Length: 440
Image (cartoon, rainbow, N blue to C red; front, side):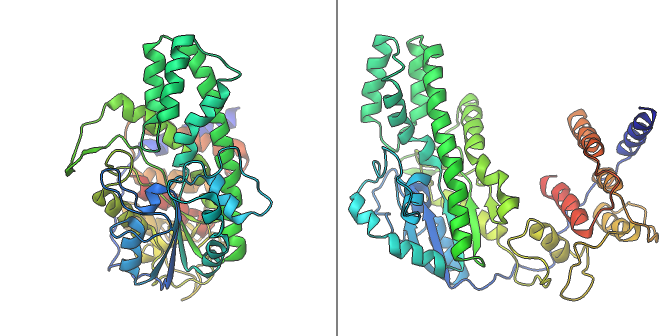
């Protein structure tokens, strides 16, 4: 206990000493890898579906959609395999011959019969095998109109107050993919003073949606890498649809209700959780699309441009020289950042040497470049993981009580994990620094 108190005292002292990270810009414009075939997988938001003007988007290239913008920027051929109404259920059904789907399979696909869609199985599978770059944007329907149908079925065994149930059934019967299903249901429950019993049924429907999404997500990613292990896979995160425009005024965003934004953001974060949590495990690139502007539910042209820019920004740079760091590895983005911003050099021209222990001299050189004030040492002594975290925290100079305690808790957790005094590697140092620069 005395030793722990001493450690905490040292941590407190070091965390109170701060300078600040300076954002370092890469020395030249990004150079992209060659992507001859760009495959688009996903739902209506991925396909380029419009709310105000009908555009055929099922398995079709849509100009000004984020996929078309990316393919044109990269000079590749776009293979459009996105379809409105698709959930993770439908996409898995197309790839897994043993998967039977559920009772709602293909129910919300607007202009193709199930037979017409199933006939595209072989084309979709071949496209995955041949692709150099795959973008996948899916999950919204797992929480959207399908959720209304799940709710309708759950009502059979969970009756609600008569007037509320009648109104709810009528709404769900006429609801479409473009409706804010959850928002309207919540408003109705409040109006009929039936919040408690409604919440119980909604919770069951959400559990169904989340379990289905999470289970299928692992299958989809594993399938893609099994048939095409070298592909660059970009996962496009879901976004809130509260930043809406009026018809005929695509550049005018209606001021949203802050509470509505907060509630939907919590749901979106929950829905994105399987994608975010498994980025490091599988090594794909997750793209946060927060700030996308929509018509009613689907992105405006400006919204698609926003998503395309996020994806292009996240793609790896072709100038990256290290053959021992895979594009699909969890350390890639951190090491790429170190290289492109001239912060850490490899142990050889084409080798980063991520498993090699980092020395005090190497770490201090990096932190000095970033903070402009960090004291440089010539010591070749190895840096422990605890010392690494403290040094990066010191150089980052985060301010505020919340940031302070966040740092303190993370360091104490490291101590209790038993890894605090293990020597840190170059990859761990790159990742720790990159996380600070990325989120500061």
